[in-house]
Image (cartoon, rainbow, N blue to C red; front, side, top):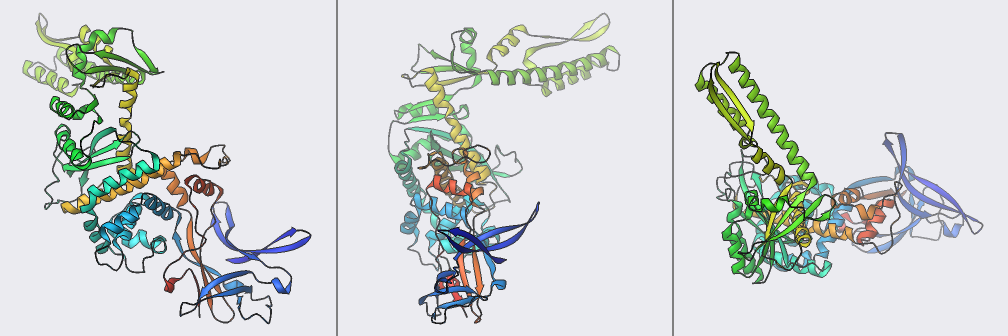
Length: 605
């Protein structure tokens, strides 16, 4: 690392600017990277200073120092001069800064700092519990890990001690576990607070609620947790105990509430509990519920109607047989090039059904049917060959082989008539396709059915509203992938619930970032070299990854009188990072403030 002079002519004069540079290895060979700019060194004796910095003595008193390279003679009459040994300048204590600063900015925009200060900072602690809660949520957003991983690997590599003003050595896994215990009782108040902030920041409305469920699994026996049970695993981990998570979001993906259920709880049995929970937290209101067919039952729909609620939901495909004639008609409305819909009223009821048909889905289901049909017919031909050649003579064995073929192909088994007949040549296998079944299967391929008690909207509007359910699915993808809510390593029920609450906080930051990225910046950002408007195409995870390369570090300037001047600074953002920061309305600090023993600007004897 070294100081490099940069010469520039201005107004007929030659100016020298100094920058701190280090040599780094790249795939293309050694390259020089500018760490920071230290200022101007004029040739005039009165303006030879490079940089004026504020430093602190042992008593915490501030003073100004003027830095000079050791080979430059400073003015004799200036006592506030420090001569720097250029060949000994070094960089220390590099820390991840950009992503953590972004997470803390989102935390403050949602006013979660104020919320937790009021909720949990009354409990005695060396570190305010609200700051520990912020640490847990920011970790879930930036680099999800266990409490032990936070203590040992992640937190020491970040600048959160500076940003949250936490003294060195105060964060450990025990303190993180204690914080989980403190935040869990405030779940209901937290959900209400976030709902208000989403409305204030983005004008979010919650008259349409999207409801969906997922599951996560627990590593270990968790014998002291009665909630984890063997059940259906959406993560393809049936070998592990499960926990069911129900999430309610609005049509823009803002979370409204969530609930946890026993791992063996079926989807359809959760609706009544959720309705009571929402009424208890937010009161009675005429809400529109949107959910998929796995939650549908006549009892659940009746419970919503009893509360004067409205619903739009998927329906089991077995119900589609009632609308066979409508499927064959050509009076469909095309809402997209590949999507057609049709509204069908039921005379004897208050509900309306919406038939939907998608060309891409039709081709997919047709290909699946053809694949299984070909496999089944190949197996039938092999069995017939064994019978004809005399390799299989026992009729009971023939029937067992035929039964196995049917069991292995349940997707298309109902399409075939199968029969073992006695003929003059002996037992023979006969099969043929049921034409009526095949025609019906072809007619319904690519089609699905919605039902609703909403009557004022068109088929296109109802279909579009149901498609908003993808926001709930996207929320679960974010929770499971980017925010790593799975697997659960905690063994006690309160800790498991607190872990999910932290993931919920991480999702609150994630969805806030997502909608901030959708906003148009106050000044249009320049396009990248590829011609792509980065700010408008940025995803939350890409934004976090981009800002994660911003670091804070200490520039250590040894002086000729045996002191070391330490400057804690932030690396210069790239053009793309500046565009993103402008899009988010974030301004980076010039330097960091923290404890005196590790002061941002300090002089050490």
